[in-house]
Image (cartoon, chains in turn purple, green):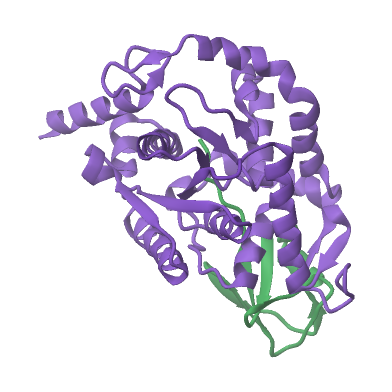
Amino acid sequence: MKCRVCRAPAVLDIRRHNAAFCRDHFVKHCREQVRRAIDDQHMIAPGDRVLVAVSGGKDSLALWDLLVHLGYEADGLYLGLGIGEYSDASGEAARAFARDRGLELREVDLAAEYGYDVPGAAATTHRSPCGACGLSKRHVFNSVAVEQGYDVVATGHNLDDEAAVLLGNVLRWETGYLGRQHPVLPASPGFARKVKPLYRVGERETAAYCVLVGIDYQVEECPMAEGNRHLGYKEVLNALEDRSPGAKAAFVFGFVDRAHERFADDAGTEREGLRACAVCGSPTTAEVCAFCRLRERVGSRAVHAR
Amino acid sequence: MVLRNPRREVEMPGPLTVAALLEQLEVNPESVLVIQGDMLVTRDARLSDTDVVEIRPVTSGGAE
């Protein structure tokens, strides 16, 4: 295969674009896709301070690299989840990335800061590990952003992530979630703006970007995610994509452009009932937010177990 | 040919294309990168008996 742009030998083909690219033009393609996402969706304004949610995996490190190359002031935040060797290797990948590029990486450790880790939370609450992990990440990333004066939290959600979440939300007609599923969630009292600059880039492309620009990322998949519903949705979507290239992009971009607005009222109803959490002060629809309820449950179980 | 996936190493007789290799292994091309040395290879690339390639999964699944 030849590069669509320069006709040099290609290193990656992207069937949904009916194109292949050499290294340099693939890297340029990725940067253009992220630039377009940021501009089209008004994700980041000039002078905004960006906090990148960094896991040490391909998506978050590619995102951080892309944002820095596009000229944004972007620091990273790594959250220690306590998932054994997986977390050790992930944290080291994030630290090495920041160290090698002279970037600032903030770190929060769930166990040290909040008294629990993801495996412990999953075991004691019978909540899925991914549920406890996602809840913890959303709370901590937002809290640090608000407390430290960042304008925006950028996450590494890619096209495949968005397609899988969208499929799950549609299958169960989660209209509130559909109203909140968008590349940009505007800031509101107690919440920093949240953006997903990789929503136009597939995860095969973020992995390829890392390989081609020399980013050493955590290749191993999280052991606690094995067999989860999200991976099942991705398998189905990839089978569809193999038969019909462009299906995932059409699904996600069509939703963002033509369907999301129809569910905005469902999300808006939930936002209207927000008040301050009685424990931590974060915005919540309940008296105590879900994060503090999780901490309370894990803490009380730990006391009973002694 | 030795294939490295984090979980296994297998030998396959060459020559064959990357596309044929993935088909024989029943791997969806959408879900992997094929890496030879430190370079990516496209699905039309021909692999010989002595080539060593890594088939690296790209699917991550940490959403709630």
